[in-house]
Image 1 (cartoon, rainbow, N blue to C red):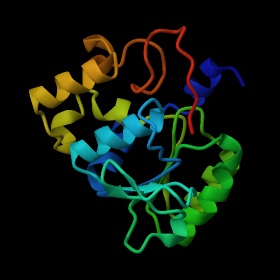
Image 2 (image 1 turned 45 degrees about the horizontal axis):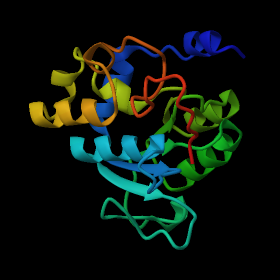
Image 3 (image 1 turned 90 degrees about the vertical axis):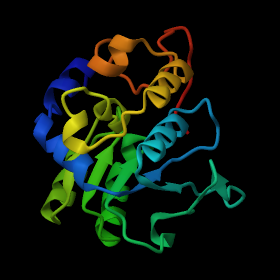
Length: 196
């Protein structure tokens, strides 16, 4: 399915997304990486700095912490309430994580950019979860018309640091213009990196 078609199909009401981002407190990020060049690292960093309680999930038994945050090796291993499960894995694995999100009592299932599966969404929604697919919460958090509604930190220093660190332009970060990619991806199209 062409990217344009995918973006059109998964076009969520802004209020729906804002309500999710303002209500969740604890996010399990499946596919978290300690590699600073990976998209998932940047998303974890910004969500954590924004104030969310982050629970990185990575099956590597040698990985104990990311940015000083305890790493869980599976969703089942998490010993606290999880509001949202964010999946940073190939879309072929999304259905399995939908099942696990339901099993641990999560309220939201979120698929990162290019992570979507209609069957997984139907399964999760039937179980009472809200579902978002093919979206990056880091992008959504910086849309200016949502910021006051979801009580985001507005530290100028943090915003400038985030833009510089991720090689973004002001227009892309604040107004959502530019390619439909996660802000952790450099805008230099010659740079090729892949999720963990």
